[in-house]
Amino acid sequence: MIRKRAAEVQKITVGKVPNVTVPFFVVLARDRSYVSEKVAELERLGVPFIVVCGENIRRPHVVYRAPIGKYDAINFVLQANLIPKDVKIVAFNDVDTKITGFTSMLQQFADPKVGIAYATELVKAGPQRNFFAVFNPIRKLFPLAASGELMLMRTKLLRQILPLQPCKSEDTLIMFKALELGNKVVFCDDCFAETERTKTGPKEELYKRKTVAGIYQALSFTNPPPMVRLLYTILPILSVVFVVMGGNGYYTFRGILLGFMDFRRGDRSGTWKTTYMD
Image (cartoon, rainbow, N blue to C red; front, side):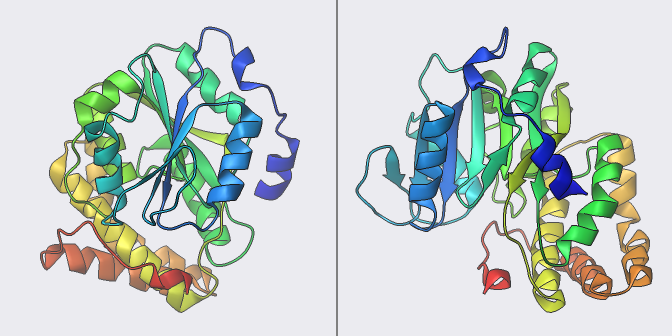
């Protein structure tokens, strides 16, 4: 269903969105993988960009930053003055994604109250297809977790929020801080960042463990809406629904519980190894 909707989203030239300036893209890359493909995509979109890469490669628009964590790469962008002063909107984009329906996302910023808009992930295979079928309708109602694969935000807001504390879920940390500052956050389920995720249940457990621990870290740093905090308080109980779903739901359940336990045991690091994609 999601794949069908992605195909139906019309492509509109970025520069034709009324009353909204063209965003400046900041691409985050752990190494050189997918950098060439992403550069070609952004050049087709006609947007200015910079790639922060964890591997030292020589090519235009690419800068090196040792791969400590995405939170650190985002902090580095501001510390190194990589965003031009006249930029009004910044787009953070993971290097291993393909963008569909971008204009509908950009249009959200015609509303001056909107501080952040983020796209949904488009995963064509693996356990997360079923997960997003359950999760996306919920986060359409409640801002439970953002998607850093493609996130747009006002530059003024970014400067208010940074620097970020070490956090495994830096995208959700940014969203919670934006909400705390009174900004409107929009989940754009008609804009897609196509990406690859875990292929097996055990790997999904690792991914969920990292993500959930990071979300609880983000909660500890911020003051999101009371309903969000309440839902995360009872998440270990609610997550039983994934076991009932069968299939790889058991591993999703385990990952959520282990991530919660990691946080309770004192995990406050913002780094991890992407072994869940091996």
